[in-house]
Image (cartoon, rainbow over all chains, first blue to last red; front, side, top):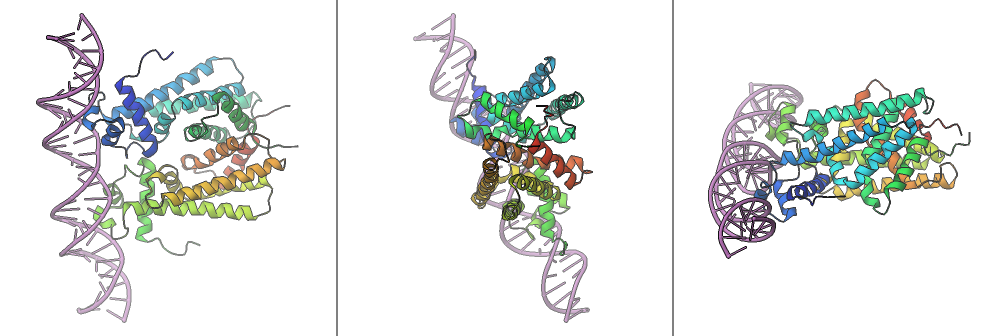
Length: 194
Length: 194
DNA sequence: CAAGCAAACTAACAAGTGTTAGTTTTTTTG
DNA sequence: CAAAAAAACTAACACTTGTTAGTTTGCTTG
């Protein structure tokens, strides 16, 4: 695995994602980025077309990764609850591998220019697929009959915030975190004796 | 209630919060803000000291409101599960009244200059108080014996994301939303037949 | 109506922005 | 080792940024 060595462009994008996480796309200047790479700003342009291109690379590749992952889950014949558990794993896995990029995905997508609509379409479709799993789970008596949007919002908010949290717990392994998250998100925290 | 009419400064802060939500603090210029107010950028400075002051007003007042709200809940003698339900209400209430400001609280706090450390202290204390309620709930057999940080993170992520979601559902009343959220966050979504 | 004041204006500043052009240095490769 | 390619550099551009100074407008009030 990991066949190709990272190109200079890859390194720039990775460094940019780190800075974007700390201060957001707009607050990071090309001089900040160059300085972090140990070069001058103009040198960046030997490798990338524009600041905007960097943002696009970070966000769109992640968004497509999520889309692909959810499609694979949909193809399976797991129960709806099991599908939700797989979605949790998907988010934990992608986020652990790229916490920096996930910050941009969440907070800087509005600064996309040419690719903003494409991103929004991917996100819209993702949320709809996600909601469908919940709706089918309700119909199939796997999931409680509560407002599906509240459930969707609640789970997805947590998964989307993982990028803030995973870096602080780097000793935790993804398998165990996924298990605990699924437990809490799906079964709640209440020790009900009813 | 609402005794005093809003000052011009209040209006500027409110308009700024709206723009900050859309594009983030750094991407909003004083000329953007002035234009939205129908005046010239220089005129803003008759009412505010600096761009930074606007951000401070938005974020610190909200952070203090949360701190105050949690202190009140702690003073009560509710069960720990009931305290969590009150926290949900607190977030729903503050967020419904100021969705714009909540965006800055979540995404622009790192651009605070003089007040950044103060904000971080408030947030740190808030999370600790919150965690304490969970820990006590576990000891008291109200809450399942799962990793308390995962539970804290999961609930708090959802509550912190409310600002993204509440504006889309403006027909829903805060009482009902709080009920549904508490249900989902505390009891989960699983229709377990175990 | 005059005085006082809140709130707008124009003009300008110094610093910082993304990006380009052209050139030099360093690394790779036949 | 020479040639080619990759990657850095300096210098500069046109534009935007937050903010200040000084002035004018228009409403309120005695």
